[in-house]
Length: 331
Image (cartoon, rainbow, N blue to C red; front, side, top):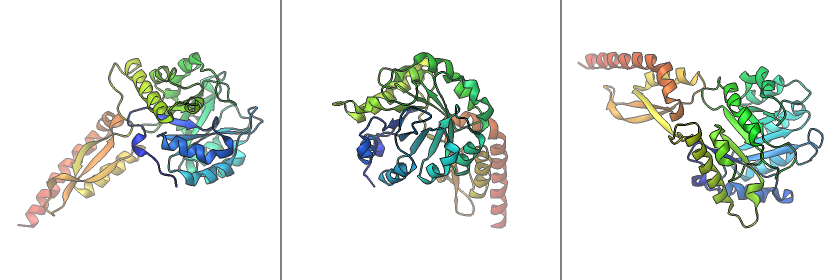
């Protein structure tokens, strides 16, 4: 396992997935160590079969060999004609998310189902000329929508600004069923010149390839710069000048006795929103145990308060009755 720099990873909203397509394909282990050491949030793996796209890269066995080199998530982009035929191999290889193309000529739902059944994030990609409406039949099974802003197959192509502008809002709408964790990815021509615009379109994950492998350029600085520009684009483009809420920030919503905290936690998590339960610093109950704090991602705090506020209030009232009952028993 290589040493990594977790403090260099994103603390804002934007996430960078470093594509190693333009690295030395004869030494991909070194490329993975470089991008993870530079602080990328994910490693983006472009799999090409020479049929669906006119290029040939690597497959599941190579990814499996690279997996022990890092703990950073692997984000696989399958540009292949038959992803369903090979999906189990890519899942076994350790891919944390798998995206394939809607333009393939085989049934799509079984492959999406296999990815999600394995507990991984499932995505569909669209080429620049493919309308976003092609994804609509599969929207409820998607965790990721990947918008291609170059023709897939080769790195270093020019960014298609108009394609992203036309599709970004619709991609977010396709993920409306995901209260937390749905992601719009952009792939193709992302660099320091295009990141701010892409951020202004509400993109979550920025696939960056050739821009990271420019000779003489500091890779870590490039990753940080792209993240910062993307977040600035989001702030002034669609967020009324307010800085974006950091993706990993958690915020407390209430404190409850442990048995009641578990009930509210289960209710919220049933909707797909993660909850952290921590022993708090607040009230000590008559049984000698402090209340537990419940924390949710800050970017869904308002939704949680709307959707689960009534349950929280009922449990807070139940907590008072429970405390009173314990005090009565204790005399």
